Length: 371
Image (cartoon, rainbow, N blue to C red):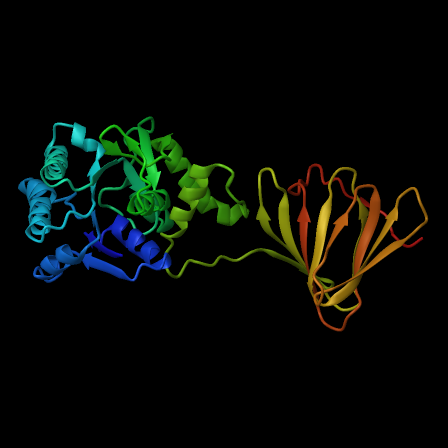
């Protein structure tokens, strides 16, 4: 299938083209403002589907709105008619097409042009009125508040919020791309004359800003945002894509002593925390028990033994563990337990606890496993 994508260097187009290639589409014609104009003839003659994503958002002169959003659409459709190519044409419009401003008028003019083209030629047309689209590769300080906020916060730059109560309707770039590829296959979602993105997120501007700052702070407090919330999950992925190239990594506080080290890695609000424990050869750690706190131990390097004893019993249970055979050992409540390094190198254990450590209520009581 031969696919023409106009505005190929734009935000939506870059994501769409990348996914089209992932799906195995080999003939994707990429057309942008710096493409040799004569190629439009070749592409329009051969195309089996057109994603018309070219447009003008922030021109120097208001007249450029109509030139870019109506004028080029007219050229594209005339070229398709020249070659009697009635393949489906998708156009990216905007919810602002309903508004009486230069940008909205230019988008509405492009829509009308496409609907008239369909009546004249019988070609299938798909008009999408996108709300605010966010996600990776969106240009900051241009026409996306989310992109600007993510970029500025990630780069320690100030942001300006005039009204935190402003309600935003947003769609995520991956959801847009999924819908567009569905439209390519004839499975578009519609609402009357228009096509729609099924998943729209409604949230206030202030809530977006608070989330982004929480993402930034999560590196210091080692927390993970609530990934069960779909918008938070998508916004967090977006925020990470704006990190400076020299800031992908961040240090963790290692609590070291002569036995090895213990480092908290991740904390969550409702799924506990993950830590990394390093034990030196011959060292035993633990010898304590919990009422409600429970843990999972996974030795990933070295070898050792995990011992248990129910605090009201004399029986000692042993589990021999090794990084050569990854297995998780549950640490039940009411059992005093320890872990001993039996090897000649450091033993590394990933430890999960069902709750984040609370120094005011540690639920940890010292008791030797061995009697």
